[in-house]
Length: 67
Image 1: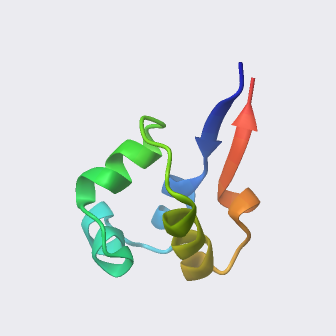
Image 2: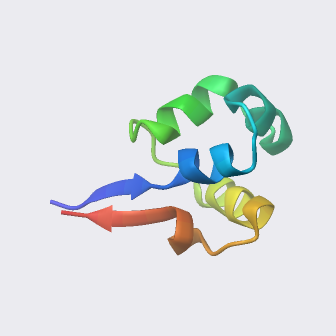
């Protein structure tokens, strides 16, 4: 079974942003960022696009599948 993983925390930390700051920028709650980083939430396509556009990378650079 494939699991959706991500590098969101890496990108957020490199940008020197807190979870709260990134959440505010993306228009979501801090808990959403927390659960995404922990792999306990799968983002909508809209949110995945917002995240990738904010960091100026592809969706695949942040989100990937692992078995």
